[in-house]
Amino acid sequence: MKTLEGHHAFVTGGGSGIGRAIALRLAREGVRVAISGRRLDKLDETVDLAEEQGYQMQAHTLDVCDATAVEACVERVASELGGLSLLINNAGMGGPNAMDGRPGDPADRWREVLSVNLDGMFYATRAALRHLRAGGSVINISSVLGKFGVPGYTAYCTSKHGVVGFTRSLAWELAPREIRVNAICPGWVDTDMAREGMEDMGRNLGISFEEARRQALAQVPLGRILEPDEIAGLCVWLAGPEARGMTGQAINLSGGSSMW
Image (cartoon, rainbow, N blue to C red; front, side, top):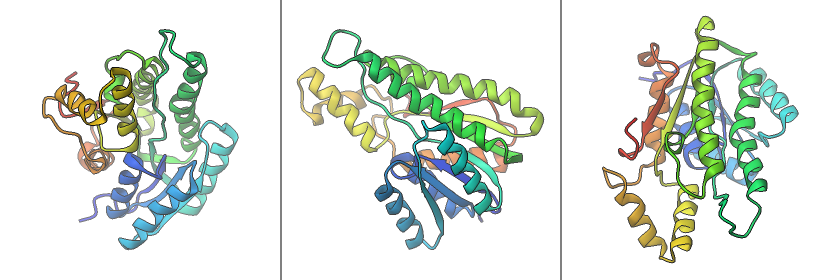
């Protein structure tokens, strides 16, 4: 049974990782899906995977930091899909911006990370709200680092805390329109971004990637890295009828690495 038949979704950052998994899972549930991202080659890979599974999917190159481009892209998506009922704000970037004197300007990295992770989410949501109908849903991808901090990642942690705050405030604002807003806070997920994080951890500690991965997962009660499709499954549930009473929530899916 396709639980989301008739829905139309726009997924930012749909070219790889969690965004790709969400887009493909939504398509399997009967949703008409459009994705965006900076890299055309990655977007094409996602579209090809969808077609191999028997689904059609639109793809649009987009820098979510460009407000004008976001407006135009969302207008086009809504027109081509015949409306919009689901917005998945997944586009984001990670990486360190150490404040302790290590090489590189932490202020530059700060602005870049917050621009993608917060401004981009704001621009996409603002544009989509002209089209989202009653019964629609906004799902924002935050992180367990939206619940706690780690050294060397002030920009990323700040931005993901901001996603949670944005979610809770917007949930109140859109409740009269019967549009729900929730966030997912993943822990370690098997993506390129996670691998880069573990590699950076290894460099900083002077240990191998394998040892960094072992140490990282040792802090996870279930002791394992999640698969992107696990996040996609939660996204589908949040978008569906069984979650119609849920809004303003920031749900951890992290193997227990955050429990509040």
